[in-house]
Image (tube, one colour):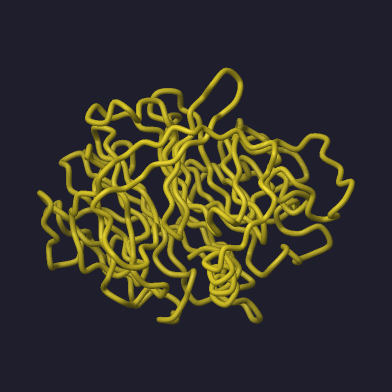
Length: 403
């Protein structure tokens, strides 16, 4: 649900299904070990669940791409929405769309201040642009299952030239600041401007942002952000991203993992550091893109892992497993491809080795993996849909369990 367009996805899916075999990337470190797991149904009947967060009380708050945040309590989907943002969204397509309600993050002091943050696609107020990405703060009402719809405070607006590559994930870091993954503004090849938005330091597009929302203002830029006082947007924490689809912090190490959706050939996972340049559009994963030969790679940070489009076409980032129920996943970064395959990365010396996760009790049909969620104990959940478009009700949430 995150690549350059519906027709591109259909074509690539067709080629993959027909057995297209490209030359295997000889530099990729793969593990032969497969980890078998099982999917346990938590909730069904959702509209394209693309993000979720657990409250301190254990309520699972799920963002439906079409605009509602739903509550799952004790594995039961509550009928009344936690928050309905449908009337704030840009008009969406039911067949395929990358816009919508895309992200949610609970404030680290949520239990006391009741604040949470969402990322959604609203109509643009500027001529010639497709929409605007809005990061907004809300508060919970006296009922923990219902938000206060009147409490909205706009934190940040980002104008988007096209409908795709929105990113949209939000996570609070160990430092208490809000990190935001923003795509390059859409279209194929990042053709906006002379160098593309990913490398343009005067736009927030194609970046990881870091802001302080603990203020009466919209937000404050932390003084130690890497580009404060330089010829760049001071909100930028890292740059050179195409479409960061799901970001997460390791609960133990604090490392920021970012899955970045590729263009035509490669999908990648990065560990993002302060001030880092992750290459797009100069590079697609670890390969020259613009120019295709002899690109200048000095100063660029290569991904810790990548895979070619014979294995999948649109990466979905996950989490480093820090739970107790699945010992075989300990210390491993779990992620997937939108088309269904699931993987893990395991640190071996200075390299990250990649292996596969096979899923038992996987539902029949064309399962799309949209996102992951992590509960308060570190257990992992998979957010899925059985259709390409967001407006069907074939979305579901599963917990990863032992077979």
